[in-house]
Length: 255
Length: 298
Image (cartoon, rainbow over all chains, first blue to last red; front, top):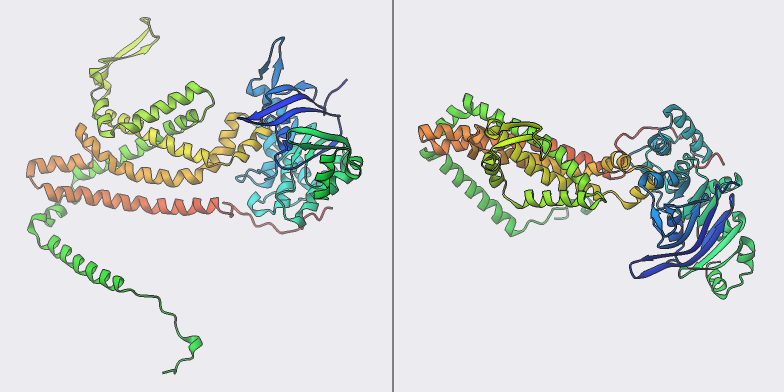
């Protein structure tokens, strides 16, 4: 049975110096699931995302992405860190979209989208260019290929960033507050692209403050506070009828 | 009074007494220095004129230019390698680079130059081969380490330490998000360096390198102690014979000044260019007709 697109986390712990940001995280995400993670800032929601992508390493616990131990291999006694090449290979299967876009400013939008396939997978340039063209069109940016990131609005930059991640054909897409750095009027265009993506059966984990998006698109909702998952369930159910008092008080403040 | 419409009156800037005093003082001092310089016969301006384009001076100038260009180019390459090593996560590699930089920045370049010139006292022959075996070849150190080679080696190795720090500073000016973006795409460390970090580090590296070139140009005068007939040594050789010390030092100084001025023009151009690149305008902005306004596809 294929585990592509799945994420399994068991008893994940992660500290930064004396501060423990993930205390006991247990989470299973099925292939094709759209999971939104909400919670107050500092609750550890971004850190989970960064662990799934290998931008942070977990201190202990089991983390399987696409069915494989992520960043490590298991022996009878320990988890050993994978060599950089293997880790890079695993990362190509997980796309990441950042709050601050992080497009490469020295490349055009088109070159940004091509950067993964050409520089990492060493794919054929012509085909990658064609694919990049299609991807830019699919995020509503046909004709913007020759623009540099600095010439694009925040919403456009974020859509290029999504296209750049998609160019790697990942099984899982992670979104770390993708609309938080945007002007309110630009939020909609990015969410629209994400909704399109959700319809295509991609596994998506979205850290967000957009409750409307969670209600409309997400299959499941995770509420985190202080390094723990407080509540997890069907997105609409949790939003309309939270079981935990902490979830309730958080939702009262943001809704 | 009141003949001009108040709305049209020019606005004059504030002139302080210090400004007037400054002008008067500067002009008087300028006239004083200039008359002294021009009338004092000991300057021997006719001697300056006589030697300014002398063949040995021009040959010295050429050697100075060669030393500057060669040691800058080699020093930058070595500095780049050191900077990459210094930012490596492999401890012994970054420590080795750190040690190199500390040693070569922490000792005077003049001492380093004399040291390399006398390296044969430490190693009379240079051996290339496999350690602890007889395989390989040996050459007499003095045969290769002539004055010019010693000058080139000394200047290059010293410059590499400074360039390494400049380049490393450029690397660290690239945002953490850029590195994360490259990593999350699965880029290898080498690709990340070549395609993401170095292109973005250039704006802060280039102007600083321009300064180094100017510094190096004047710094080559130090190799005169090794008897290399560069610009200063060429002047010294003449006044050792004619005792016209001051005029010949003026000849050398004027050439240094001319070359520095020539170098600072492209440097300021480069600085302007790269300070623009860091601002919002991209380097090769292409005019694109807005056929598809934002999000029109949806």
